[in-house]
Length: 378
Image (cartoon, rainbow, N blue to C red; front, side, top):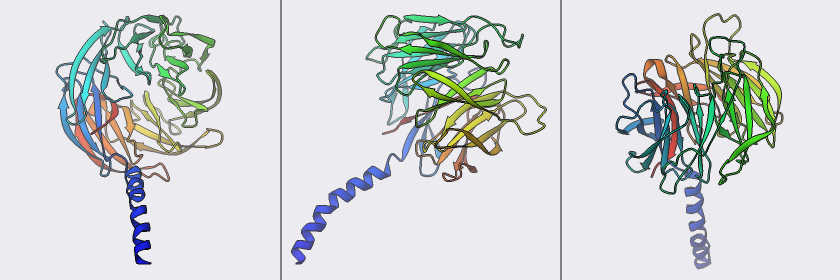
């Protein structure tokens, strides 16, 4: 009897060990920080992020890189792509050594438009998509197997303006986001109050073509900025920089239908604003959005799992000025905010059941941080 019992136990042990390893997941990640280099920062900084405690440890910094204000990480975590947000308009590639966080420069090419402010990469690592803010266009740049960037093969320029004569005098493209199935690329235009929609067919000379319809209009003067898809892929959320609101759309195969417009501002707010970034928690239950100007806060919303509608939960100060980009760690336990105008990144513990921000658990000083991205660490 004891012999049979021993055989059963020994048979089960490998499965138990595998299950434990599967559930544990990574304990650390590399945090890649993009910044404006007009202040203390010299370029891209890499930290080791410990997912059990929220602690950050400095690993490395790139050599001088001009204004790497937005970053994309390749699907295999081997390469980093960073726009150089200057009037000349360029995008740079780097290899990432996951054990040490060391970055090695590969190459840099023109984005065929001024002030590039956003970059994304498809899962197959065939193409980069860059939003040129002052150029008013989106550019598509092929990628080589070694991570280097080839010259742009396509640009699409937006035309027009909107009601704010100072900020919407012409097109200002702000994002270039792939749909979850990567059949579409959507890009916002703050200057013309539109979300543009293109079909994406990787590998062709002209990888993107306008969809039908080719765009949806946003409330005049709102200034569309960043986008986030729901985890079930049925909704798209837009944060409007000048309107300081989140607009909810039903999404179906490249088509958008607006269903909700919810403000980020408290009743009676009178100061300046500048809504910035938007993300959804890994469990798909909560949406977060930052607001700059005199607000300097982050709003939390519950996502209705059936309809995708938002319900306001709380609004919290970000512990600094100019909360630009933020990121939620892959485990869903922590939220990290880049406070551009106070040279800091603050790590907040999250309540995974309520979505609320709890205490700050870590803070690091970084010059003008404006973009945060995670990569897997070895």
